[in-house]
Length: 175
Image: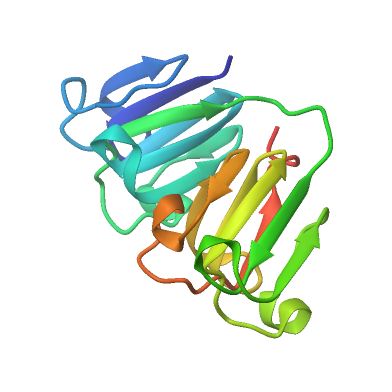
């Protein structure tokens, strides 16, 4: 289990809330979040309650301002810890929804989907092993989407508004 501390103000000031596990609604503890200290583990934080909205995957460290985790505002409303994974990593991506069209399987990170897959869009995927992060842009930039093992029949299943995936990587160097 990890440990994360949320602070209402920048530079770890103001009211704070400590969490050691998943929390679907942080609003009762904090009205805003401007800084975070992660003492252990890897975490996914969400801008809205119930694990929806913009996502940010953070590892152990200090984030004195929401811009340090690439946040667009001071709204953090839910979080969950990412369990450590000790097995392999396998991800199958598909051109079309419901696992249709061109497909490719990966076991390693992909810094540019277009260079490897010749497509800008991934409409479905199957996470066979491990935890992964999809990024909207290449070079691990842009909006982030956390994927745990399972089937994602369309891009909205991983929380995206579009099927554009520029890069992805394994959640393994985050601990």
